[in-house]
Image (tube, rainbow, N blue to C red; front, side, top):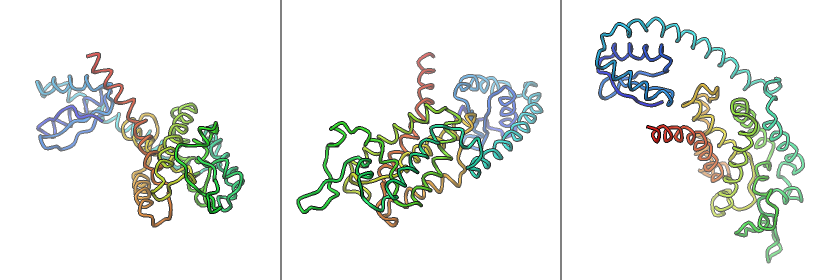
Length: 312
């Protein structure tokens, strides 16, 4: 949402907002420091809205602004009905894991299935064995005392050709609760992205977030949860959360979004994990994942703005 200017009088500002809405430009009017600020949702209509604002300020008494009030009200009523339908569908998707639409996203389903299989194969991380050792970003090695779990810089296994290790830590989970918690968010957030942007986009975002968050966590061995023997889908889930959160605010027409309570829960949980009260947690992966998702959501919007500015 972009600020296009201010109007001194509230009633004038509301009339102008109705006029923009009737002209197909969704907007928001709120009280500001210099009168009533007008915000426009769609970046592509920013220039047109600024032109209309200049025309309105030059002649606010023009009859066309009063004529748009009824049309704008009808548009708002219709939009509210559409939002009601979307809210009902949103609740259904979050609470009905067994519904056909919930499982219609192949990438989300495959990620879920692989995580479950790995969870069973690794006994939810309770026993270190060959399966875990093939999935960590670095395999476990014996040190001089005969003990395992050593750390070596430089990704020795990856450099040796085992490139899958850059991704596979996301499928390791330490305990059934850890697994189920992450799968809930994967189904919810990943499902939204796959329905809206497609399977290829979700796969690309997941792989990108997995690689960057895993590398960042590996590079921070001295932090809680650091070192090469971390696991979990949380870094990817925070990327999915960041993406859905930003798109829901800036591009609601894409049909994605998270409730304000969910935003609070995710951010409070992020901070709570950093306190070490929950034990060793891959906090670096969480933060990097969130940054990846937010940047992925913002980047196309900023690119469109840059392209428009170069054309003008």
